[in-house]
Image 1: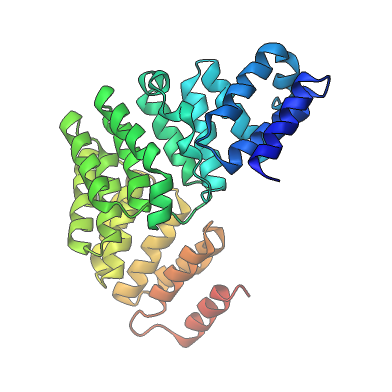
Image 2: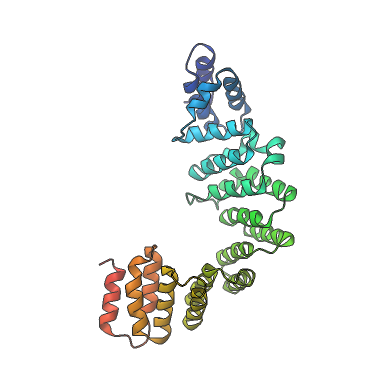
Length: 325
């Protein structure tokens, strides 16, 4: 159905004794066909003034995309800019092929002056929830208003942690220079470990392993009790074949979180590879079924079975576990 047809049906339903709830749905369809067009939003605002209860009921328990699209705008009308942004971010992540961010309200000064840095950061991460492909020129063009919002909000309310979180989207979109620059801006406000973690991910995407490791080490300097950072750096060292250093890093992480199964399994794998330790391979085989991510578990097993002089029966057992048997 065309945009004009959706609008026409919505007008009839809204103003000629029809069903306001159905009118809302048709207006949402018109928005999806042309998010930058102001008219559907104006009709939606008018419809809510005339039939507030019916409009509220139509989006009260959202389970369809159109309800989230409408809900985002209604939250904007209510002045709840953080929730408006977060709803729109989820919509973009679910359907990134539509230029949802071109909605007039999203670029409105009332929105840009009121949405908080934390709220926009949450919304920005919502875009990434479904793992959308955003590194094309077309995707970047559709997200141009969102990039502008990041710049405006970070200028108005510079919060280091929030800025670093927003930099993740820039990296995913292939705007690696802009992502690194936003992390630098975050550093100028306050040095936080997460900015270094994001920076590490960006350098990793660029293929610069030296810069990646340096960023993780700076993150550890800022947050020396964060066990997951030891694991991140250990995994990077293992990829480079530095299994003894990887094992040492995991050991340091275990000082802060001795019961984490993934950390323990990684330590066992790297020790088995570095030393050919049957004891550590046995520990890995014991822990592996509890490692929550199958791909990571199988990678650890692959490292471990490459250790020197390991017994053939243990390697066979590891291979069976790796294959899910």
